[in-house]
Length: 129
Ligand code: AMP
Image (cartoon, helix red, strand yellow):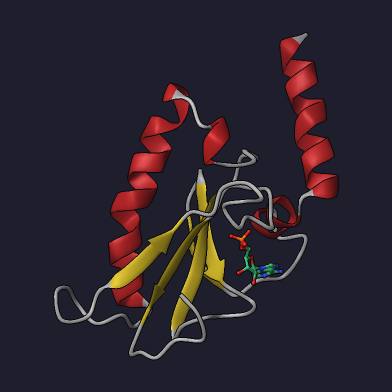
């Protein structure tokens, strides 16, 4: 029974969540990376010369919803971010580097309620951030 409920939730999120649809390929995106659990794609309105988003394929609304069960993929995402940043054109640390941003909730500036890490970099000035 719990499995059926989880499947129903997954379908509901696929219907309602733009980043679930992007991860499933139902909405096109400029893909940066994909594996079984993670998906990365260019932000549609970049603030910086390099600006992509990393998401879990499984729907989780925000960092406020993360539990110990999410620690492994969250850790993997953090370790993957610098590699993808360099691949996408960020200059290596320390002269270059990049910015990781996880907006959480309305006061945290979160607009899309599917957990995502912004990865931004490249020469400044940037549009914002
Ligand atoms: P946040 O304010 O942290 O929720 O950021 C949401 C980000 O998602 C913004 O930077 C948007 O530009 C980006 N975004 C929204 N829709 C799309 C889309 N269809 N493809 C790529 N990026 C998107």
